[in-house]
Amino acid sequence: MSRTTIADVAREAGVTKATVSHALSGNRPTSEETRAKVLAAAEKLNWVPSQSARALATSRANTVAVVLARDPAVIANDSFFPAFIAGVESVLAETETGLLLQVVTDRAAEERAYRTLSHGRADGALLLDLRTDDWRVPFLDELGLPTVLVGAYDQPTDFSCVRTDDAAPVRELIAHLRAAGHQRIAHISGPLAYVHSRARADAYLAEVGTDELLREGDFTAASGRDLTEALLALPDRPTAILYSNDTMAIAGLSFARSQGLAIPRDLAISGFDDDHLSAHLSPALTSVSSDPAARGRAAARILRDVILGAQPRTEVVDSNVVHFRESTA
Image (cartoon, rainbow, N blue to C red; front, side, top):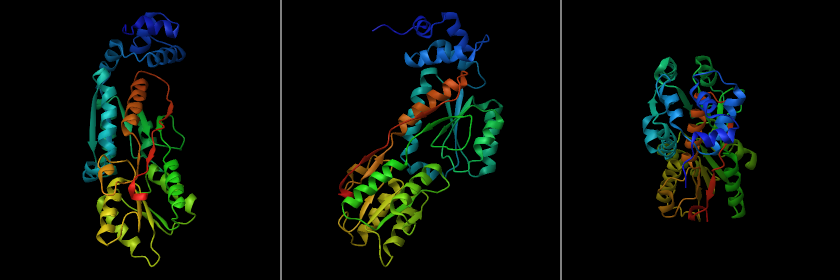
């Protein structure tokens, strides 16, 4: 099979080869309409030319960044981040673009990080852990740093966005548990300031109609264990618990079994993110695979296009799949 060339892209876009080169390099003025046609043609033909690599290389840093305001211990135990970063890297490798990952401890450090990035350390950023009222979105817009939002951000913004539906799997899990006879269904969420945690919690509340059994965790095993203990100590305890990640779910499952409860006979348990060990537990853990690598690839492709001058766009990655296993059977 022959390799796609600049001539193929020019033919698909209905322009000359020189126009393709100018549209991607930015060396000469090109209309937004023409640039969009060229980018669409390149995307359709899966073409990553040397011209694009040179265009990225002549920008300030040939690097894109991810800044995480999380406890490193949480990052180390969360299955989402390695897979997401692998997806990002698979796209950046096509143009030999570097990835800068920085962990910060507070808002002041996060602001300093983004200011440094905007002054030439990176050509763009991927914004994760979106919050319901996120100060970073207008802040990055003010800095002029090309950015792609990863999450279902619903506030007005000119940034590109990669979205997923976090509510649908929660509804599916609750329907599954109710069909098995469960009425007292609890939910241990992640921090509710996060867009994805809030979306899952809101879906839970819409289905069960009360926040009596909603508890806010922090994605750590300790919070999963402690909140499970508190829920099981209630006079009318839940018979099923939905956790917002597998780390909390595994800790909760372990605690419940230490108290003599049989899973799922006495307590049904489900997680989220489908850690690679979850299917191999005893009993195997029902969980939601979210394909972070696919989201990473989508975000990196969009950011690459934005850096090259494309207009912002929103892409929905339909990747959430519920895997029903023994822990809710």
